[in-house]
Length: 162
Image 1 (cartoon, rainbow, N blue to C red):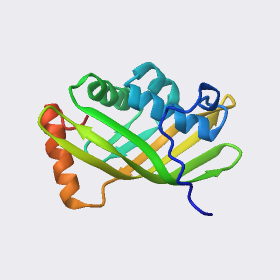
Image 2: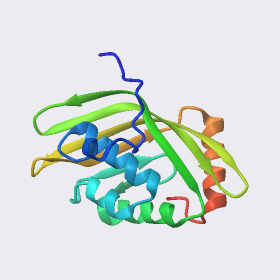
Image 3: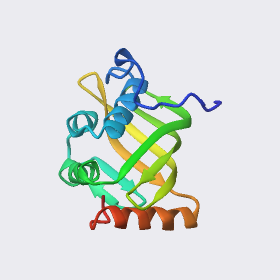
Image 4: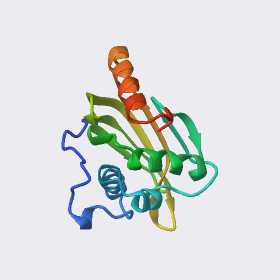
């Protein structure tokens, strides 16, 4: 399978961003993230204790009661993080699907600007005929970039889990 280079930014037409398709669920996630829309983000995730997020700064968070506050802190902080999904492949079965690719973008605080380059996997489960995110894993390959990313995050918030 050849990875797609057409970036998913969250700016796709509204008709393409619903939860009925895997592509739509991904586009909705990036729309919620880049617009800092916590209500839309909440609707993108499944709501069970079994969901999990593992990111370079926050470690592992489980359940919406842990994941939601991470997004809330990020969205309300002075940090401006924007990303798009590219170089990805989509894999779909009847009830479970996953997307494997890369995110690129920028992480900006008042004093710093750091590029965002993250290997990303997102897993979705079909719930009531809609794709809901159940897992996210992100990794930063470059140790110097990870160090810069952590520095920018600590400058933008006192809570390093954001």
